[in-house]
Image (cartoon, rainbow, N blue to C red):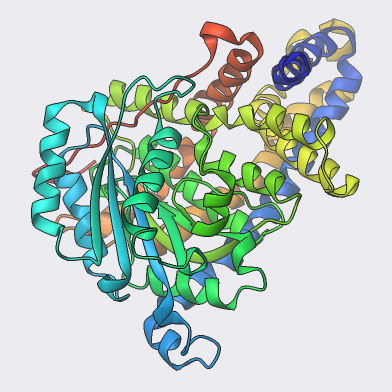
Length: 502
């Protein structure tokens, strides 16, 4: 516990020290700080280009995969034709207080999938603390869809179980155990033939999702030691969303796409799928963490001594853009959502303590690589945008002596030039956005493409206000611990009867 608290303080300590050191150096060492700014902006430019090529690679493969009839491929491919019929899909949909239209859309999507419904076990995982109104929605969903699948189960996760925190992880574990005890074990279904997909209740799957998932599972070199990650598309209600919300939604989508082309970095996020057997052997999800979607990867990696990986599906699932009832509430919701995702920094002390303080046969090189990769991601999230945006500080704080130098005169010109070149990534992001838009409503005209392209110039604002700021807050809260620790924040979801232009 003592060492765990030490490592909980490290991310915030590094981030805050970096920011304070940058400000101090701008005052006392402006020349060297200016050199650092130029080098850092150059690094940021090269990183942007590097990420863009990964994004483009995934986008090409995504479009190719969307054109394939994966059910037909399952049936005809010699590697899968004799195996796919034995696979079951356990779909867990954690629900809190989401309205009936949101839940119905997700179930309608399940019904449209090409994979046989007689091989699908669907669990609507409700929370007891959500109250009678949510329970009534569960009964309505069971009435409408209960006979459409091989088995259908509505669970109610009890409130206030000792050692648990309210959230998706504890709800998912309760639901998986209920499915195990009430369906899988009584029917003697082979654990190795069951794939578990955990979706937010607003997740709408593409028609071929379970077919491509089954194909990836049956052709994977390590089928029982892998998780399977789709690309999260936040676009269910994209046309109802203000520009800043759209930018944040597609930024997250693009991050997910870039990670798909770097499987060595890939960690489970949001909706994902995992074989049932290893989950059951491990005891399912930890019930005392907030970031259960990424934490489950680290659980499995440490439980199986490094023998775990994530297989990129390069295929989408669609979820809601985070939208409030007005612009102010939307900004607040976006900030809270980003802060919750940034709370994934809680995985860092978990990783380090289990890598280096528990017995583990994971090679030291892999331990160091994984720990560094997780730390550098959270560190960059917190400080990179701040360093880029404050590149003018040496000029503002460096004093007369520095301001009389050629470097001081040229620093704003150099950084501006680098940022303009770096805007190439923003421009290309805007272009790629158009290929990812869902079917457009009738009011969407040619002029709206201009607005949807121009929205990307809000990126610098979003990187600070909705990127670095919530990341730093999450790290500080982790460092302080106790009552400052974050609980699970449920993203509000709703539907509009009429679609308006934004």
